[in-house]
Every structure is written in C-alpha cells, then in structure tokens.
Image (cartoon, rainbow, N blue to C red; front, side):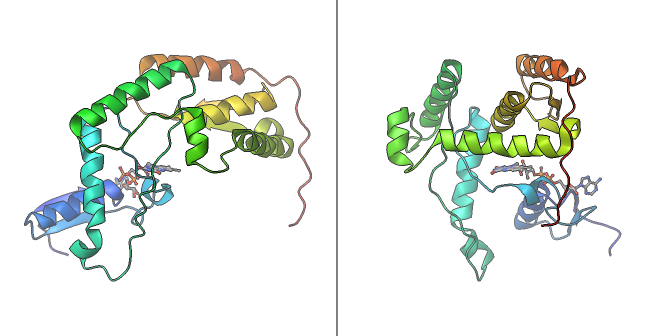
Length: 224
Ligand SMILES: Cc1cc2nc3c(=O)[nH]c(=O)nc-3n(C[C@H](O)[C@H](O)[C@H](O)COP(=O)(O)OP(=O)(O)OC[C@H]3O[C@@H](n4cnc5c(N)ncnc54)[C@H](O)[C@@H]3O)c2cc1C
C-alpha cells in the first residue's frame, strides 16, 4: 500500500463510500477508504433501504432528489451488469396528531417550493385506504403487542426497550408500556433531536427505570 493518498476517507458506510466515489469521479486518482470492520458493517448494512422525499429542510429535500436522480442512472454510470432493484413506489408517513400533521404540511409546502414537479401530497385516512389496499392498523398493533408480550413472558425484567426517539421506536415504546408499565427502556439518540423531544422521552423512560413491581417468571426455553 502506498504511503501517500490524495484523500483518506474513514468509514465504509454509505457516506464514506459515496465520498470516496465522488472524489475519484472528480479526478482524485488515489483515494483510500479505511474501514475498521467490513463495508456496510454498521447502519448501512442494517438499513431498510427506503428512499424518501418528505424532508423538512432545504438541504435534505435537495439531497434526496439529487440522490434519486443519480440512482436512476447508476446502472449505466457504473456499467453495472445487474439491476440495483430501485423501486419508486412512494413512501407513506403517518401523522399521529394535529401538530405532526401541521409539521408535515409545512414540509410538503417546502418540497413543492423547491421542486415544481414534487409529487408529495397530504392524504386523508380514507384516501390512504384507497391507496394502500388492505392497510389494517389494528392487525399491526395487535401483532406488535403479541410480540412484545411474548418477549416479556420470556425475558421478564430482562426485557429492555431501546428508544431512539424516532416515530417507530416511540410507537414500540408506547406499546411496550401497554403490555406492562414496568417494562424498562433506554434512549439511544443523537444530539440533533429537539430538546423538548428529549425531555419528554427522558421523563417517560425515567419513570420506567423504577423497579418492576412483579417479576414475570422466565419462560422455559424449548428446542425449535
Ligand atoms: C435498522 C435501520 C433501518 C434503517 N432504514 C433506513 C431506510 O430505510 N432509509 C434510509 O435512508 N436510512 C435508513 N437507516 C439509516 C441509514 O442506514 C444510516 O443513516 C446510514 O446508513 C448511515 O451511513 P453512514 O455511512 O453515515 O454510517 P455507517 O453505515 O454506520 O458507516 C460507518 C462506518 O464507519 C466504520 N468506522 C467507524 N469508526 C471507524 C474507524 N475509527 N476507522 C475505520 N472505520 C470506522 C464503521 O465500521 C462503519 O462501517 C436505517 C438505519 C437502521 C439502523
């Protein structure tokens, strides 16, 4: 390996790989990518690979549109012999209360302001049912409650729910509290979350740190 490089990029996740690729594309001939584990070892490898446009800041709206445009032509750009399985079928985000609906509405207005051909729309519950055939929230909630109940039955007080303060994890957290208010949790988050969100979640998680009143008996493990 050479002792010198035009640029050294640390981390072989999507950001590091993209930076290295774009530097090379712009003419740097010796770009070194250092990855301590393996490519896509962390978040990138775990991503559900959903691509959305519904962002609330100009930089994110522009970045996501530019990224999709690039992905549409990536097979040709890389002369890649296979498909990259890019599917553009829409991304449904649910507002759970009026203030979220207001926030989403502001975001949609911003997206339209930036891109005249933006297709993001606010839909009513009835319109969502028409759009997504068979969408049944009750089934989803019941299934999630059953999964959490099973886990609590198996692990008792050992069950600890991670809360990243994202919408999905807040929903999981609320469902866990329905299964048993004594289920404990912890917060994994970044410093970019609004202070009010952090304070609200911290208060919830703090109350859950108190010792559970009754320990559920661990279920006997069986071979499967
Ligand atoms: C379960 C899950 C689902 C997700 N779903 C989506 C989705 O649907 N759509 C979406 O857009 N985003 C999604 N995300 C978020 C997305 O995956 C991340 O935002 C993105 O992958 C972050 O990429 P990154 O390159 O910044 O970080 P990472 O992918 O975490 O890469 C960082 C890399 O740096 C390496 N590294 C760290 N320290 C060093 C060091 N000192 N030396 C060398 N290497 C080092 C690590 O090993 C790692 O490989 C999801 C994330 C998760 C966890």
